[in-house]
Length: 292
Image 1: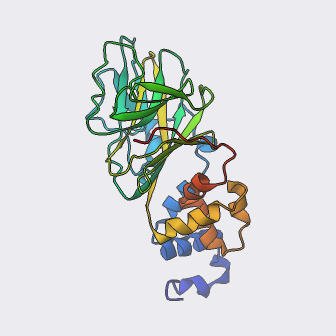
Image 2 (image 1 turned 90 degrees about the horizontal axis):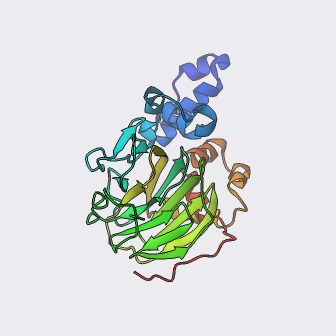
Image 3 (image 1 turned 180 degrees about the horizontal axis):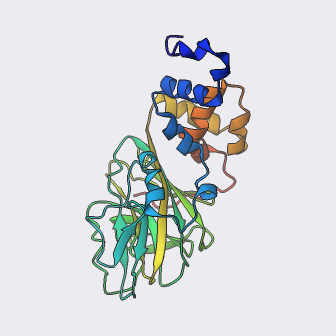
């Protein structure tokens, strides 16, 4: 009980919910504010028109953001480098943005991108690339940039998955408001996608040993994509335990019914929920024939 301040017991009326959260924050080595933010449903607490100042509250929960130093000339960043605005005035080609941090070997990475504008044009894409991809090379032509060569792997809004210039039908079309989740398992070299929390399956294998970057692109004027989450975990015993539990859950809501201490449950739901999500049993069995 050394973790509990003596005043906690001095007045039983002070044993409020806030005090319990502070205690749990100490146990898990995190600030209460961070735990609270992760527990919030972002879409219920912030509109698409929210200010940059409002987005700053969420910065500490993002492990990477869009890199302002490698942008195409027709791209601007808003909301603390979380939202990408492509072709603010008009479009004469393909623009793109990369993540600020490489996703290195031995990590498990998950991020979500929301389409916060109309989705149209030659292509709007998201995926991963290596450091050799030149995201500015098609600034005066319209193309499906991500996956056009061997340096990138990309999912188009049309539902096609691209690599080495080859398209493979992978999902249904996504539109304004769609949330696309991306899971990169660098230990096994797998790239998987989710659409509105529904698993789409594995799109590509063989990405082991390649430092990769998240990347998005668009050919359409005044289009936007917002990074609303970026999380990671080492391939550790904690990760394996969460993955094993996830494989036996019918859905993510079932996590709340597990017979475990409330504090541990909150930590799992707020900080590690994405690990359970990416390992839930999938009704969709899609694996790319590409062995890269």
